[in-house]
Amino acid sequence: MDKQLKYHLRWLTKSDYKMLLKGGKKGLEKESLRITPKGSIAQTSHPQSLGSALTHPYITTDYSEALLEFVTPPCEQVEQTLDFLTHTHQFTYTNLNDEMLWAASMPCAVTDEKEIPIAYYGTSNVGQMKHVYRRGLGYRYGREMQIIAGIHFNYSLPESFWPILQAQNHSQLPLAHFINKRYIHLLRNFHRLGWIISYLFGASPAVCQCFLKTPHKGFIHFDSSTYTLPYATSLRMSDIGYKNDTQAGVDIPYNNLSEYIEGLTKAIETPFPPYEKIGVEVDGSYRQLNANVLQIENEFYSFIRPKQITQSGEKPTLALKRRGVQYIEVRALDINPYEPLGVNQHQLYFLEAFLILCLLKASPNLDSNQRKEAEHNQRKVACCGRDPVLNLQQNGENTLLKTWALEIYQEMEEICSLLDQGLEDQPYTTALTQQYPLIEDPDLTPSAQILAEMKKTGRTFYRLAIDLSQQHANYFKEIPFSQDKMEYFTQLAQTSWQKQRHMEATDTLSFKEYLAHYLAQK
Image 1 (tube, one colour):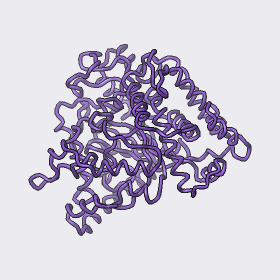
Image 2 (image 1 turned 90 degrees about the horizontal axis):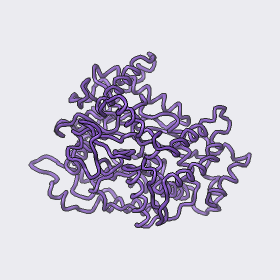
Image 3 (image 1 turned 135 degrees about the horizontal axis):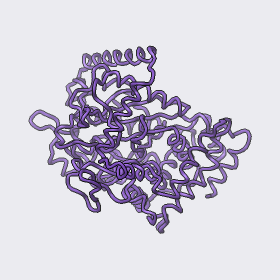
Image 4 (image 1 turned 45 degrees about the vertical axis):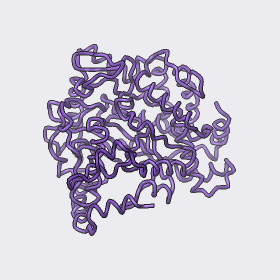
């Protein structure tokens, strides 16, 4: 255990501070692909009865018109977060007719990417910008990659925690600057250690043949229609998923918030010849927002991001520059196909404790080589994490994954004990101890269990996922949904349409003018 972690745990275990870590805000963003009963991507528009995908606060769309995104408000209790996510699913299923939500991260039944409808947000300038951005993603990376689904975990420490941490660290920085510094500190450690999330919770070890039409190096036929890598944990986070070679040159520093903002800004403002060949406005139609390395900040595929809520029309980098880091967004979670919500409470308890570990441990600056080392580890675990002799790079030296994972486990034990103060069922410690057998035996990980069930039952990945999708649909339709909740979400949907119509009626600029104004913000 490093000295800084020991120091922080020593004063946090004092009676005056034992409850200081409790009450952090937790939220989720969960993507789910709408499918037909046969498992193909729904070609229908986003259901009007769900509300406007542009303005609804909790039910929207991601890349595709068929890719729903459920958002929860930030809650202090994990159970509150999951309850709200359950309610959004229940309301959605009252409006889907015979369609279902795909139970896995990796999609199936894609024979032609033209079958993937790009999300539409109406005629307002904001709506057009969201649509054109997605059109650009399709030109740049292909549409298929964009419908890989995942879960984002949003987290912020309790406000009362920060002044105490600042005092204990004898920092003379203004509090807001200290908070920014410590959140970036957390991000650096997550880059070093976040591979453990793919190992423990990776749940995308297989992919349909129709998605991976040309098998990449190392892929094998699991059955007649499924490809896999022998020791894969999360193909979603591998080279065939979000971590593609196109962005390999986007090297964003994490040593302080200013460097991070400058790095992203440079990527957004730097022309990229291959994207210039695509064109921006061609024959009166926009193919992308610009021809730069990144169109906007959201295009940067990172395992974790510092976040600040944006005001209307404000760039995310400017929001961070003006008001600092409000929370962090972890983007490394696969959808667990065995969970109706795609995630369970034990994962969220573990994640909260893990993020606190990343905050409290020493976190030296990351130079370019160390960032490459962290990226190497993340990719190796995504593609080969269940290999019992897999070595990762730790400060330039080989370290057995199991050895390093056990070190992380031991460092989290006291943090979990602190978070369990006053809780009879000890949920954080329980969540941690559930992971110990998985560290000892890779065959117990979700990714291994998925492949084992496919082999045992003779089901392809497609068949397993469609069966689980139907089970989850039945689950949400059968559990009671109160009239109050139905009225609440119905009213939200109606209000969201009113907001969209108001935006469309009050635009005063042409889209070209609006886009130029947005991109020129400094």
